[in-house]
Image (cartoon, rainbow, N blue to C red):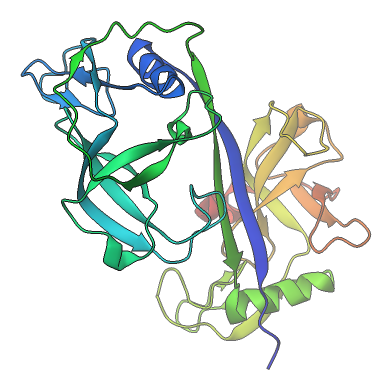
Length: 314
């Protein structure tokens, strides 16, 4: 039995956005220990605020200040915090209706355990020691036994040095276990071979294999070596240089139908000017020393494939 393969993966990108007047006032207010909401056409106070009335779609700018205390409307206990979550110790995710607001704000509650949390409990904001104009300026909520704050009162939303934009680091950490079929495929790539699996029903060979035929839905077992040459079916020209990728733009990324395969895979096309790449171009893989997959595909020197030979793989 081959060993089970596992590999850590990280998908991460910074999401940058500018802020309109309402969101700018809200985040700048948090920096100044002030929680702002917005009043809708029918008089409700929304926290966090939005720029358009969710019922009428009218633009709304009527900012009000609400309390930094509130009531838990619902909650869920998080026993094992993940990296970059607000607290490193177990905590509760909570929806808190701040005093003066008509909607609830999602944040975290610092509590010793789930027995200390209940719907209806009173809480207050614990402000972060250093605040920059972000939702993390609220470090968390904590239990509170004091009196409710008064009703919301109007606020201009004006602060010195307002926050006008934010950068949110979106990130997903996960572990990939490829399974039997893809493990065989990856093992073959170590030997500079490309292996797929044949469906026992339709007899098509799929690369990379998934362990089942995507058309018939039946399990696949028979391994079939395909390629190494193939045909460009469709392609695109990349004009934006990716961070950390040492490839000069423009370059071509293509769907390549390897000989004997019933599914096109992705690959970069090299060894030819980008504006000479075409559908039907015959290509072969180029490997780098120590690489576990082809670095790119280059023209093989063969005549272009006839359209009828690859039209079903577009």
